[in-house]
Amino acid sequence: MQQNTLFKIDYWNISVSNFKTKKKQIVDLLNEYPETKNDIQLFYTNKQSKRDKLSEKFSNIILEELKQFSQNIKKSIVIEDVWSVSYGLGDYQVPHNHGTKGLSGILYLETFEKLPSTCYMQPWNDIEKDETLIFEMPAKEGEIIIFPSFVNHYSPPNKYKQNKRI
Image (tube, rainbow, N blue to C red; front, side, top):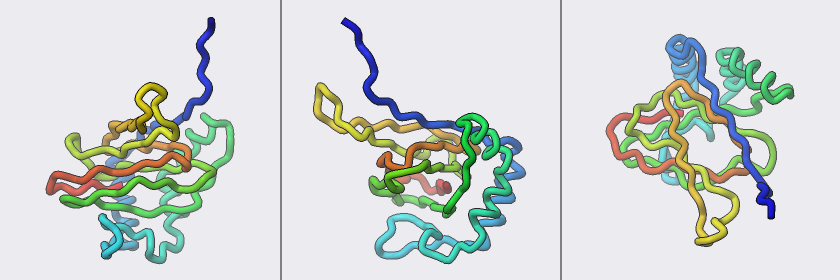
């Protein structure tokens, strides 16, 4: 008898080089695109705001990492959309995905060790318990996690006064 793997889901973890400098550039850039919170959202974001040229400007800051990733997967890549999200005390994100094709990425811009990381939900149930499997991927400031856009993910409630910004 032989056991094989039927499916697997790849993801990539990229450390941003010279992050201290790039973080300042990204924070300065995001100041041009302020985040807001409304009755529907459980966090602060600029996703519903006008974000002209944000993708292009952000891509230029992390160009070295984009080139590295492109070489690794042996495909050219283009960032189509960029927005920021901040989680204050009690803020969280419900399970969601970013569509059925392509890749999505999360840059951990401001975080600290105790803050919850993004949780990813396996698209099929565990074969023994018939339960959804959840993978909380520890991520630290200055890391980018890239994953298939179809994977449902969420951010648990922030239990600390310090913000998490991605």
